[in-house]
Image (tube, rainbow, N blue to C red):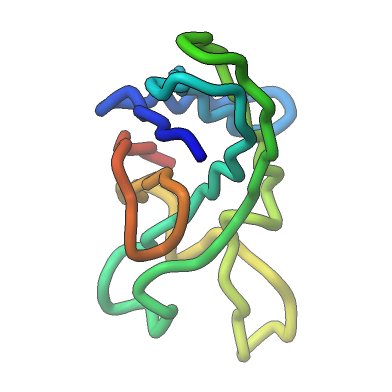
Length: 120
């Protein structure tokens, strides 16, 4: 077994032309043996939208040697950051635009070690 360290801050950038959001951070294997980690990205939508507190949006499995660091990137499309609008029966960003979404990354929903914010 080994242990992993997540950079405390991630970066979230949005491509305005495509709407794709890329979230990136470094993960380091701090143990003495090679191992694999499944990094999980959770989005926390603004309060008051009727959405669950934390939603799993992406994950990535990486294998790292002892002491090795790697950058992991997650790509989210427009649908990933939308909410269901009952009035129009479609996914929309209407209630989300202009608000901040917290992106949290860790080995599980109870072990989130990296955070950044995205303003839509």
